[in-house]
Length: 165
Image 1: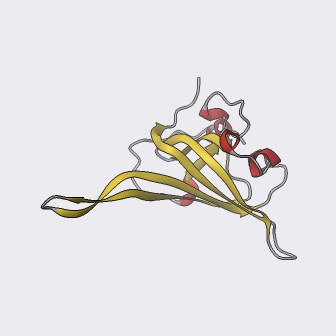
Image 2 (image 1 turned 90 degrees about the vertical axis):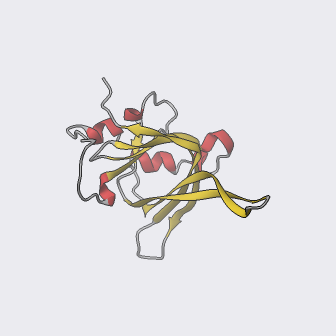
């Protein structure tokens, strides 16, 4: 499913105030390489049980004259851990788990993405490096699982969803 299809009929309210669930967050990735805007990106949804965002501080230990040792934050790394059950025929999963991504290196596995709250439309966009950790996983009789680690390249930009004209 493309982002434009998911957001059809949904109008984010930037001033929304209230509870937010994990299901209110959208992860969409330009996996095919032909997308021209976020509305064309494929949405992580079918069979996906979790897309947890994590932030890790990048720090540097320094010692200053008279003031002593300090730990200085020099950046932040964004990681999104994606897990779920394999769903063959889903455009997102089929593209994510394609041979060229699973075994790709360098620019082949760096793709544009957006990650935002569909209630407010607010989030981030940038480039991610894709690492497929498990495909498939699971014991006999259970669903085949998938797992990927998505790491932002640099610092993502602020993003606010708006429908393309």
